[in-house]
Image 1: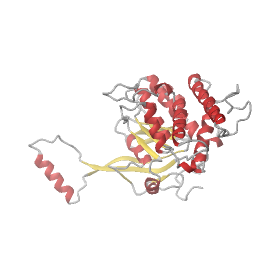
Image 2: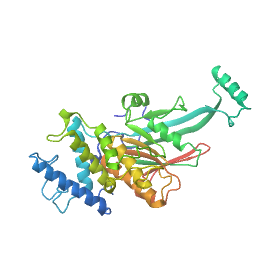
Image 3: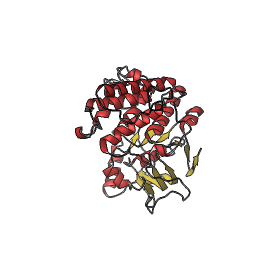
Image 4: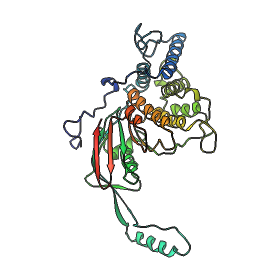
Length: 368
């Protein structure tokens, strides 16, 4: 049930936290991705064999010849991965996997600054001192409006593409959705609704549920991809008394890591360093998928990606959007993405909603 101040229009779809199984999608299989399908199929056979060898039953019922049976010709990799991850979460805390969405109405954001700025030198230090004195006496500077009157919503399992020229406030919009409001302020009539949760409560009680990722990937460059994702999975590992029967914490984290890596097509990089600008490691597109996998293993149901295709070629930009679409379909994660100079196929493969933000204060929000 939506609160009284829900900013969505009356004919908008429900924002309830229903799981992905309650909705159907046209792209619900991996028939066009045989390499990822094969990796997940191999994992399904291995996990089923391990469960049988340990004397424990499978995590979920496997009907003979059904889409979840790895020995069946009708095996569906995406359905198996979705059922596996859902069952793991339900077994750990007794509830269905968390999902999140957001609706915003009359989103106004502004900051304070100087009309002009200058490079600090020895001769203009006096000007710097005078501006510092004005701040002490309460002069915040000139008010600069960044966003004005933006309405929209993103449901769980959906993707929103934010388009606009540099300086139009795309990054500010994503930071507003994720709750990263340092450096700017909201207007008094701005309303944000995280499926009935206020922004203050979201920031205080649900930290890590909504995340903002800038264009630069920050990892420990000398760690391998497998170790990086294992650490992310182990950090969200449930207590020992809530683990599935016969499964240790290490096995739990390794299984989740292997399934996520297979879903995102980075299983072959398991023993390769992540790397950075100075340490040789995986490619830029693979490093971007490692970042997405790390966010998925952290159970962040609302993710904001700011210009994450920077420095990627056309093929890797499309692959980045495809991976976001995969985690949305499988895990119910809502993604808000700001993309610059992406090919048309990147939008065709994944983006159902688009928000155009064009100065001065001209905004379109459309569903494709």
